[in-house]
Image (cartoon, one colour):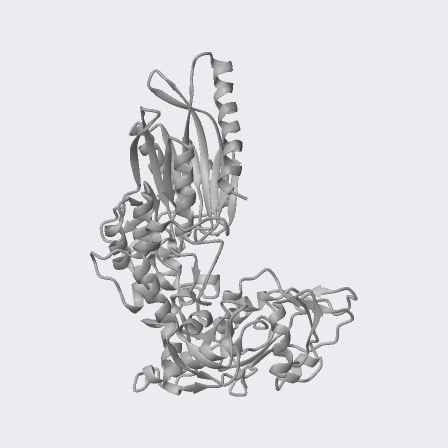
Length: 597
């Protein structure tokens, strides 16, 4: 199906109807259409390419999004293009430009190069813009041909806004001048997520408070429309609309969802992520004696799929960096004698978190030699960031390391006591639903819980009793065979996200090491040092074994089926249609904990 040919008739009908209504109702007054296009969470995915599998993809990539943008500009005479943030971090290409072969001030990141080609009018700053530090964000902003905005981030020393809060775009609609105000807001949680990079340098104002402060100021500048570029989702959009009047549209982001709706009659969009969608907000405007008013509006989404070609301008502009990134991810660093796969990582100890923890402990032991912290109990926390990580036995390449540890986190070490350690584990135990052993029907073991928040802490032993309610599940918590007491202190190797309070596992953590070394690079260095690795789960944690009257199930990839026999995993069997059954008694046979309660 030719997408463009299919859509044009529908659009034309809508335009005809939209134009006829005001003519009928208001005599000779003509309706003018303005279309606000919106993207969000591009995350450096310029090309439709998966660097972890080294394959072309069909349904994302800014090079494809630009094709949609060009079509919209062909169809509609009056358009504006806005992004709501999280553009410069995320893909392996973006990671390589920021950390592996870092760009210098004056260079242009590939995603900014693409956005310049696309002629964005404005962009908000998102939370991931800070992952590489304030200086790299400054580099990206200096390279951008469009303003990057935030109305709620302040310099700590001057208490002044760090970036421009808004921009007034002076454009024309059908030859008539119009002023469009665009204002940006970012998540206050950046002070937790990137605490080490930001603390003492900047601070954040709550979004609703900043909106109430700056949107009236923007209106006073005589703008005809106010467009909010909000790097948050629907609930925050509602809060903003409740806090201040005068908002004509909101382009959302952050949660990677797809949405085209009206909230309190205000059109809002969220266009997925990685360039897989384009949001369009249609305004039908009336101009009376030089004054604009909104007659009607509606939002919609256009989607990227296999029928959408990549824009050749962008492909050519980033070709060199794209090809260099492919070469980078294909470079071998070592060998593994066993497959490293995370399909069962939320129900049983596994090779992925084992490898991460072994590497982090290896690094920290060396780092703390000869320091005041040498000899303290040293633990390591790692989560299965993806539940479909798949590395076969054999060569390990950079692309595999990026599959094992997908985020650009930096290694941190925190000091916790026994109470904090148990609280950390209890938060992780929210990974599971509460199971009633007496029920005879099927029960789903896994809760709606992000796998990247399910930390496995190596260096201690513990069990999780899924029969108990949230907050009461950690039992038999020991260190070197002794019960963990409240006053005991431990060092835990983790990452900047967790150390800063991400996931709410820790509050105001005592950070003893805030390294700029990436956790992923620690893993790579560890593999290079060892040459050949055999990451074998220590089974230091397990679900408390118990008899259940009904089946306890969970879903995973069908590719996981072969692992049961390949790795000799006990207590898990395949039912069909991606559904697996877990036997809490039999699965304990994989561990030293085998007593049935």
